Image (tube, rainbow, N blue to C red; front, side):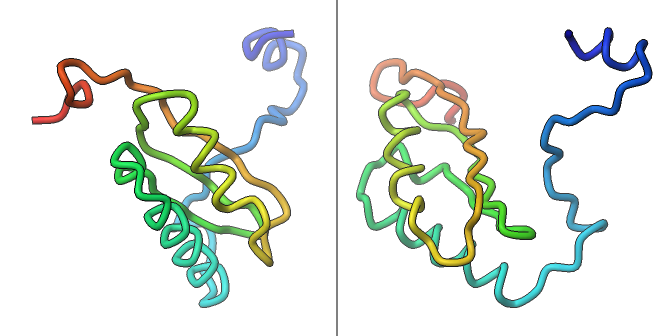
Length: 107
């Protein structure tokens, strides 16, 4: 059943919703988990991973941004998979192939 069919049938939307900083109180622990996740991804030394951003809310680690390949998307997730305090990872990274050595849309 697609999104419109679900709404028409009166069923709740069960897809994960992105964190909304106005709706969630970010505790220091969640911010610290996101910071550690970001550091782990940067340590991987893939240039493509410099556009990855992390947010941690209620045990869920959100990965957002752009990477050049599906492999880099997997690398980013693998970097953070065993972080304490993370019960779920939502990898919302967009794969944007590079053109002439630069990511599409980059200056």
